[in-house]
Amino acid sequence: MDLSSRYLGLTLRHPVVASASPLTSTLDGIRRLEDAGAAAVVMSSVYEEQIRAEDTAYALYTEHGSHAHPEAASYFPELPEYEHGLSGRLETLRRAAESVDIPVIASLNGASVTGWVDYAARFEQAGAAALELNVWFVPTDPEQTGGEIERRYLEIVHAVRKKVRIPLAVKLSPYFSATAHMANALVDAGADGLVLFNRFYEPDVDLETLAPRREIELSSRYEIRLPMMWIALLRGRVKASLAATRGVEGPEEVVKYLLAGADAVMTTSALLRHGPGHLRTLVAGLEHWLQAHGHASADEVRGVLGAQRADAAAEMLRSQYMRLLSEYVPGRLAL
Image 1 (cartoon, helix red, strand yellow):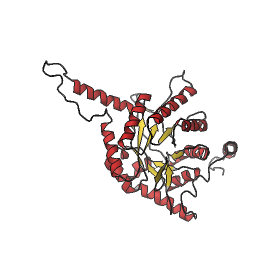
Image 2: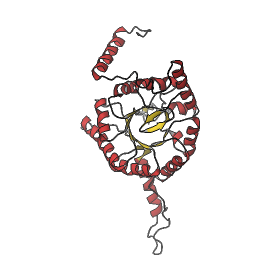
Image 3: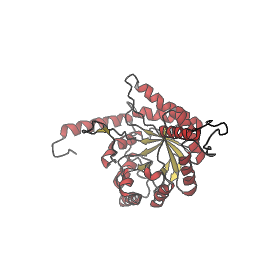
């Protein structure tokens, strides 16, 4: 059985990738995921704000007491190999790239164009096989237009593309007014792949303190539908790799994403629930389904349910929408 896949120009043993999570933040975690069978790993995201905070703390410590005495310019010598707050993350990336046989993809969540470009270059130098740009931005300014938000995304991708040569993937929000158009614009700006979709974590409210309450709910299989639909719609219509993320709980979701047209299927929540060993369940389940349905490879089924024509796809979605709402009977879902 040939499960091999191509993602961002990288050859993977199979399409199942361990996406960014606490499991991918350490060298030991990355090794465990490789041993469990991950085809590739996306390192936990680096956040520009955290790096800035670490840089500020470092400056405060090293400059504390500077010039307080005529014979002491500083009491704390600077670290000779300190590379901003990125030092530890870059070292983890370097060691992982040298010690594992699967691609290690860096993940960056920037806040400024300068930050995106500077950190991206450092990841490339540290040995990242590819770079995932995790653009997490909630537009709260009522004066800001959709066009301005889209230009912000495109400027980031264009600037990073000019700086690095390794493959670039963009982790997208599902909230663009014209997702297909934006997908093509990102590819034109330099993206080699798209990851569909990013999750936005909305705060809850504590009714006793009336303060925001931060909670993370791991994704469930019901979240597969939106990214699966858009992967099917984009398959063959954008010149980029497509990675699916969200809702991958079992082998069934892996198969569905492949049928829609995903080149890679990423999972985090299932691995946090069940541990790295769950990767074996996902890959074995995919192989079993392919064999049971008479397929010799993953490529045979990849994209068979993709929507190649935009006009036909729009009509199909409209028809399904009308049928679901008009034919629904309480207690029984119309087929």
